[in-house]
Image (cartoon, rainbow, N blue to C red; front, side, top):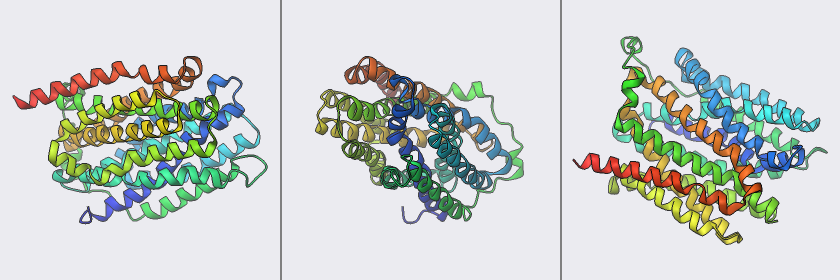
Amino acid sequence: MLALPRNVWLLTISLSLFMSLSVFVVFIGGIIGQSLAPYVSLSTLPVAMLVIGTASGILPVVYVMSKIGRRRTFLGVCVYTIAIIALAIVALKIQSFYLFCLSIFLFGITMATMNQFRFAAIESVGENLNATATSTVLLGGLASAFLGPELAILGKDWFNTPFVGSFLLLSCCFVLAFLLLWFYQSKYIPESEQKQSGRSLKAIVKQSVFIVAISSASVGYVVMSYIMTATPMSMHIIDGFSLMQTKFVIQSHMIAMFLPSLFTPIIVKLFGLSKMMIIGIALYFVCIFIGYSHSLHNYWVALILLGLGWNFLFIGSTSLLPRAYRGSEKFKVQSINDLLIFATQAVASLSAGWFVFNFGWEVVLLSTVPLLLLQLLVLLWWLRKKAH
């Protein structure tokens, strides 16, 4: 890891600052939503709007990036995000639920940009270091696991309107990210390669490696986001656990999502990408079994396992995806990959609040089982296909 180029480390630190926004929103979005929403079942709408905004922002972000380059896009989005933070503060001041949801939706551009960091890191290294570069960048999520909730708590009571100070602190993250990304250097792409149109999208998506990569990432994100979004509602609002206890569980989950990145390159070497992703599915099943109880300990262990399972699936799928495209096809394939991932994740986040308030925590957990079984079959098919 230490031998990785400067670009990878700049992206790692910047990801921690960008991702603090999503952790921040997951932690307090539902709580703010519950205080502003006209109906309690809409409490998680702000969190869902972040995911919907991310899905909506992928194609525009990738298009702009293909025209002006990654560096200029990264820098421009830092400035854009600070402006949207100001809009969120206005929404809180005037107590407008729908303006607050709009501001969170507009943060989707920020998240769509952040999700290009892993591809920018892969482009900065050789193919043999894809998993290592991806794992290293995702380590930035460790800092965000602490930074997002701590900013929310620290600034909560600075002003008469709760959480206005929290958003002001959040804006400082993007000032710092701008300064760091100023030193990022985009990879030079030869003009001849830029002009190549590449294969048709139909030919690309028929590849088994593309199917496995995109399905693993989608299922991993959908199940993780669905359960994670429902957790603060179930813990804090339904079961009555304190905000600090809820923060501890969410922070532990975020740490579990990113801390294994220190070891996943070793796991890849020992088991291979396919078997590592199968282990990720198995961890999800254990998460569901343990999470069925409403005790604080069970919430904690279940959310840790949820984070571990996501890490194995996401790093595996991200490392596989470059095998499905050529240099001239990267923006096309990366945009389709992220669009499918976050469109399905948006549905999961949007439905989490409705399911948990109308059917309970147990139904939230059990409703993920069919999807996980289907993905397990896909991975076993891929493993068998490679063996022949």
